[in-house]
Length: 195
Image (cartoon, rainbow, N blue to C red; front, top):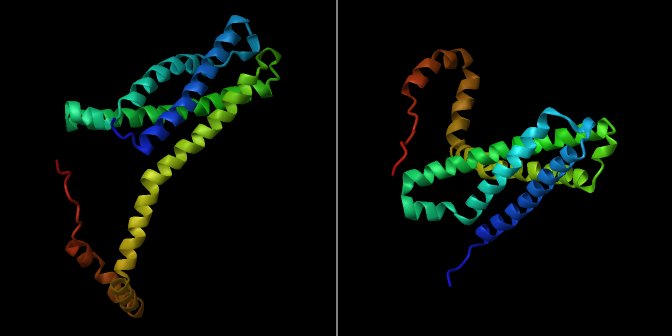
């Protein structure tokens, strides 16, 4: 039997939580429509209903077909496209969860009696948790590594910067004259993407 990674299992459990929220949101909106709850009419309601179904199907697909499988079966180009598609989906999910929060707050503020249901509170709390988790993931995956690499670069080159700053502070006008020359000499070490 093949070893299943911790990341894969945690992804499945997180997606199960999202499945639960999608089902709760969809059934809640359908219930409001079926009982004819007039005070629940809101521009977000149709999007929440439609996207819940689309997201449910797409989430099943990406839960059981990891990027590594797509890479092995179809190659690097399709795997990159698949990853970009997943990123776009998660960004739309953040918007979706914000819309759910907005919708449920609207129902509470309007004191909509026919919308009172335990699912309203569950999807609101779950959506808040999901937005926080997705933003934390974004922070950990993108922002934190950039910050750490920048700090490490500065620490590694601290002696050079200290000498340069000391010289610039002693002769500020001379330093300003040399800025354009320094920019012309600067080498930006940008490496192209390698296959």
